[in-house]
Image (tube, rainbow over the protein chains, first blue to last red):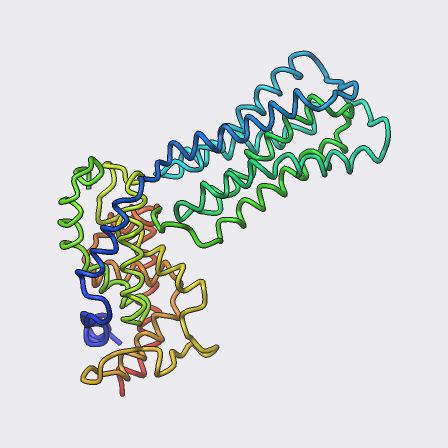
Length: 219
Length: 169
C-alpha cells in the first residue's frame, strides 16, 4: 500500500466523529463549576512534601536515642547528615511542572547519596547481629509518613515513575537522616543492606504509587 | 491561558470554545468510542481548570492541552476499557459509530490503531488529524522532534502492513 493510499483510508475511517452525549454547554458548565474550587498550587504541595520529609528526619534524629553512634570523622557526621537533609527536601522538585531536568538532577543527587552511604561508615561492626533488622524496620516506619504525603502530592497530576521514585528517595533520606545519628553500626554490609536497602525499596514504592489514578491528568 | 491563570474567567470560555471540538475528535479517534471521548473531554477540561497552576507560559498551550488529553486516554486504556481481543480485533459493538458511516472500515482501522504502541498512535493522530507540528508533539511528549518523526514513521509502516488487506478488499 502506498503512503497516499493509507492516507485516504485513514481519512475515510477517522473522519470527524459525531457528537454524542453531553452537549458543549453541559461540558462547559461542569468545567466552570470547578472554577469555584481553590487552585491547587504545586509550590504549596512541594513545601508540604519537603516539610514532611525534613521534619520527620530532624524530629526522629533528635528524638531517637543515639546508641553510641560512630562515624569516620566529624565531617562525615555533620556533612553527610546535612546532605541527607538536603536529599529529603529535593524530593519536592519531583512536583515541579516542566522538563525532566530538575527531577533528573535531584534523582542523580539522591542516587549518589544512596551509593555513597555504605562507604561512609566508620567500619565498626554492629554490637548485636540482630541490630540490622531493627534498622530496616525503623527506616520503613519513619519513611511511611513522608512517603504518604509525597504520594498524595503526586496524585494531583499525571506523574511519571521517575517523579514517584524521587519522592520515595526523599522519604528514604528522611529515615536515613535519623538512622545516621542513631545507629552505632558502621560496617558497609550493614549500611548497604539495612540502610540503603530500604531506601531503594522506598524508591520502588514511590515509582509504583504513580500508577494510582491521578486527581488531574495535567503533566 | 495566562489571562485565565490571572483569574479571567472569560478567557476560559474562549479556550473552551476554541479547543473543545479538536480535543473531542482526538479522543474519539484515540479511543474509538464517542461516549468515552465525551467523558474524557470533560476530564481534560476539568484537569485544565484544577491544574491551571501547572501551566508554564514557555509551553505552547495546545501542546499542554493535548498532553492532558493524551494522559486521560492512556489512563482510560490502562484501566482496561479498550476492548481488544487477544488477536488485536476490536469487537463490533466497541466502535459506536453511527450507521451511515462505514462501520466495517472504522472497526478495521481502530483495530489496527489499537495494535500500535501508545507513542506511535499518538504521534499519528496528533500530527495527521489534529494538525499539531512534530515540534508541538515533541513538546507534549517531552522527547526530541526526531524521536516523534521516527515514531510516526514506524506507526505508518505498521499501519500499512495491518491495513493492506482491508485496502485490497
